[in-house]
Image (cartoon, rainbow, N blue to C red; front, side, top):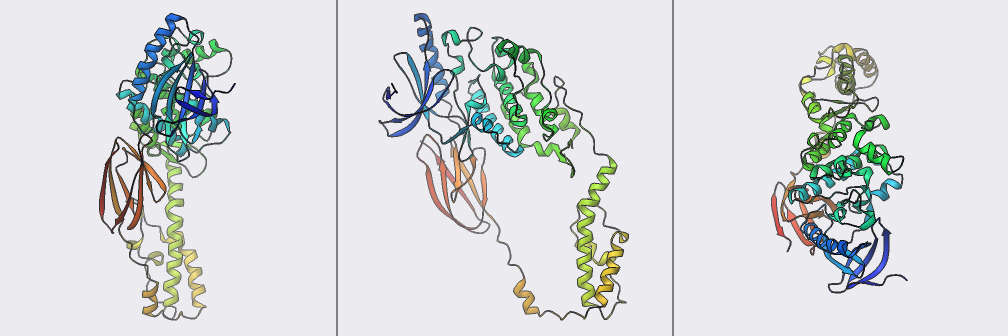
Length: 473
């Protein structure tokens, strides 16, 4: 018979099965709120049941303190007969497991965004002394708005009878750290290892440890280093080899010291990588950055330097060709105006080099680079009648309007809020502290899943600044 009631909650429908129970969509009639209910089936002796209740409420209380944009909010916990349950915020979206199982290939920027948001949530939890212990794709929710939330904080520590592994830990071995599968004490760096395995799977399509029975997987976790992600997927930039290797170091002390440090490297991955025009090979720009990211425990492919020939070719493509085109167009315009008097001297390449926006350190193009094309243009211009002068009034009409300076909206929101401007998601504050907007009226909405949204319409002048300060309570 389908479950209709759990505690005071009215069950609407089943959302899915987990290893420990069933997840339901339900309604809280007390405050007319839709919630997700996660049940935990108990298969315990009397002694284990007493231990469960003590630990269950302690862990739920710890997780309930975690009010963060990237952590699912827990509303309530309870027990009904042999079923314990946790009521939490209901999210519209998919689990990362569902996204990966759909076969979709995520771009690097989206992978970085998802994993960095998870790292932000873990960093906050670790600062509060809470370790998740079961980070895996099915415990990461991606909402329709793009925000990412971690679910199931603290559940991995709950005793569940025969399902308990190593005496006191339940989890997913292929995503767990070596110290965790061996039943040793863990800290936040165990979560960092698990997040590294999730990143690895998102980059390659394969978890780093798989195949064989449970004992084979555990042996891989403890003793084997998986191939670097770029060896399994040639489209992966080698900079991710270093990030993954550092997160998944076998010894906890060799990993990132904090989840926030991992998030920083992820968000700055393009600062470490230069993409060559041909192929998917990335190289590290800064040797110090390479040393900071590399991990001797793993052996990622060597990072090749940019040789002088490649640099010279790149400069010719990036700088020489556009400047040559500018020279041709500029020469055509000047020669069309001066066609009757071709003896008049012209600046090198038909343009004044002081007006060309050249990158620092780049040499202006040589006359030899464009002279054959310029001579052809001159011959064509000589055979054409002189262009009629354009009236000054027409030039004035075609002149672009002066661009108005952007306005700035600064934010001070406690504890956090998801910011929408004119219906479009801009990000989460904190850490986002300022948004640049075009002058004019804007509809501002700031959401926190635990409270009613804050809405306000603002009018910003060109170059103006406005501060919104709000505390959800």
